[in-house]
Length: 539
Image (cartoon, rainbow, N blue to C red; front, top):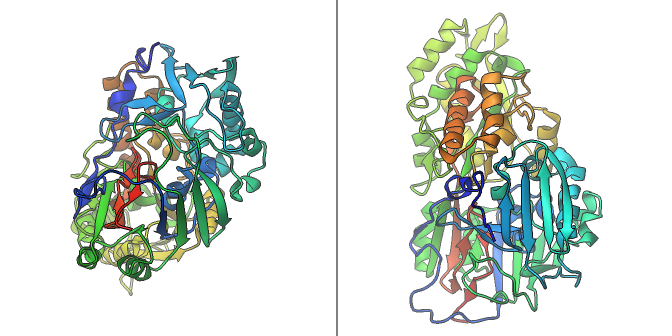
């Protein structure tokens, strides 16, 4: 069998290179050196920093949601977090056509969903058709992965042929994503809202046994699970009997609950809490996120951000190193491009983003924006003021944006903060109701730029077509070899900054606090947690 070796499929290994795991105060897997062999059983109590937005992996977007939903579905492929290579999961082998329009997957036999129904080629067809039916508003990432989807043909019970009307070289890596995880017909037949109620049927190593929106989620081990990814560290069922996710928004409460033994692991642990964690025999596990770093995406139809000079002036007006040093810590990095530095095709544009407030002032002076009586610049009666819509999908967002607000005021720009709930943030994003939108998107493939920045994609900048950018992002889907595709992705990053379509701030890193009893808590290739190999010691 051919497994990802045709001309376009050879791109996967290089383009899917995943983030490097870096742990502070522990090894990267979180396993204690003297803990002995893994012990099945037990309940892991996990504190989320934010409520999952939906129980459906296909509609999931935030890291806190994906920590939960990743556990209930298997994907066609899996991505090795160390090498970026795609490995078998539900698909035991696959082929890609030379033009990257046709992808044929041969599924493992004997795999079942949690309701007992079999996982077949028809399941693949139903899932991908359902993604298209959900649409870009409900499933923006999954929909973008299936750009130009023409349909899935059931060749036989275990062979699915996925076809696209145009080349789609990024699709193989996308087949490893949580958003394209395979769910049963009992779920794919439901409308979008009902797919968010915790009744999802997957083939993964855990199943939902409790789901209270905004409060808690309980997952239970799937008995008889025996078709894990080749990336997993062991065969058979998961070690943990249960995972209890509780929403604990306050960082201090999360840390206190971990150090007091009420929780076993927590999201968004603060680097400054490391001494407290170590004193309680806990550890801080971190890994950088690939994809688009945190930043501001301007709406080109509203306010002063319509002016290209304003957008260009914002780039040198932000002291990104100060953001890291003041708000975050050494586990984080300043953003230096429109892609995070661990993403395949990353182009170091740090020189373009160097802190230079004098340059920012000069650009604004030349564009006719003059300081007003209160220090905020004015042109033709319009104040240089704009709002930014954001949510606390990452615990540091508010503090980061408040510091950016101070930095921008020093060059005469008034930044207004509009902190909203995650559901409202999503609604505002879909309606394009913002001056600027602050977010990040994680994916171990540079194609994520196409999804967020092209007119044909989400077009969050609400702009007209820019051929020099849109053509490059479109062409990378059909580039003939690895070097050519990487070169196009690098060019796209330059042109995104050229047009002021992204104002980067910091690269996101996952920072997980874990008790000394938590062993082998691992990050998958896109920096989300995988609990299959996790086990508990010392209880």
